[in-house]
Length: 261
Length: 236
Image 1 (cartoon, rainbow over the protein chains, first blue to last red):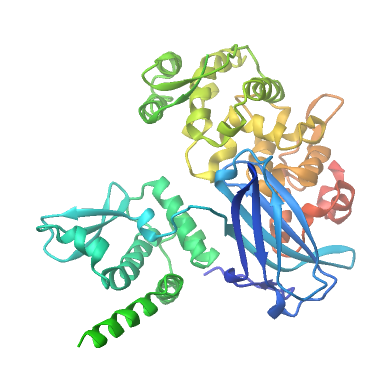
Image 2 (image 1 turned 30 degrees about the vertical axis):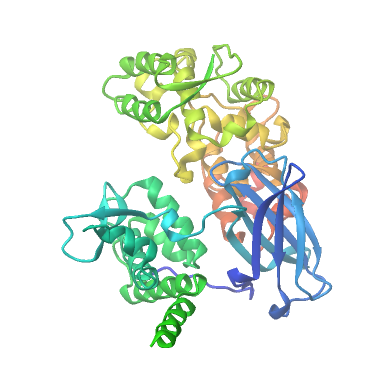
């Protein structure tokens, strides 16, 4: 299996260290970027750059964010009003240092998703949820026309209750449903709607999926290290659970139940 | 007339293109009919003349004029806009190609005429790709002639390898590829560039190896030339 060797000691820093959001300030479209590199112990004379591009086009702009001199977390508003496709922006955060005359990348984070104010980042905004009266289980993840669908048992409003009101349904079901979507995403022989595949690729990247795994998913490679996939599946589920504070949600339900007793 | 396909138009366009190798004559007629069928697209303000263009640079400049003068830049990220454009332009572009073989002129790959959300093949779209190569190189054609000097219906290996990766398709890397592979005297791609060593595939491989370690996009063309291996000497 192909593996990457990092000969230069480049740091691929954690996704939570950078956040980017498009905002509107007096009618001008800006991108608010926040970053925190304090834990990485990078040389202070490093330069920080941000590549912003519109997904699916050649459009790309580079912004110089200054020197890493202060050692503190930073934030910056970037004017992206001239970008044609600001609805589909992605970023790459690059920290460079000139060594032997070459601008070497000492740290980076690629494929940063840019949120927009008002964006719905709930998994349910991408995963189709369909009531199904014929379902013999409470829920199931089906692939329909190459697109994953979460089927929920429908009986006298049961699906609506589970989806919107049952407090434990989302914390317990969505991570496992996500795992099943990952199985579909990585499987070489499963039918795939490519539009859907591309959307899920973004979701998995955002959840920290390894680029090597994404390359495997794109390449229809049937020789895959199963252990690696199992680990990656768990990692993505954990990232999802953590991001949506599902443990907090369950604890809160437990406390409510105890206090009601 | 200008337009953007609706969902139905988009779907029909892919159906039309499924016949490129079995009935190319019908594809040309159906493309024009589809682009003119008002049930299949949303009409946009503004006008556009179809012209018998053959070179990517000329198409890029003309589309830039049409798009900017009609305030359509925000639509250039919409696949349905480019697919309507492709349907509208297909017949005249194919008929302007002096080659005889109609199947070859149209080509068998659907992505030559249809954009999908799969960005891996985005650069292959014959109508949008020249536009992006021109506009995203700050409308400075001199720096992007490696992507703009070839025929519209026959973009060639240099376009495939250089436009195929976002980091190569703009800025100093694109300028470097133009320096290596474009001949300003003949105003075309240098003969023999596809033969290794120093060919576009090698170019792509070399910079691909630096991707994660060297911020080559921040280097000037001259700096990039200085780090190229000897295998590129004959094109320097």
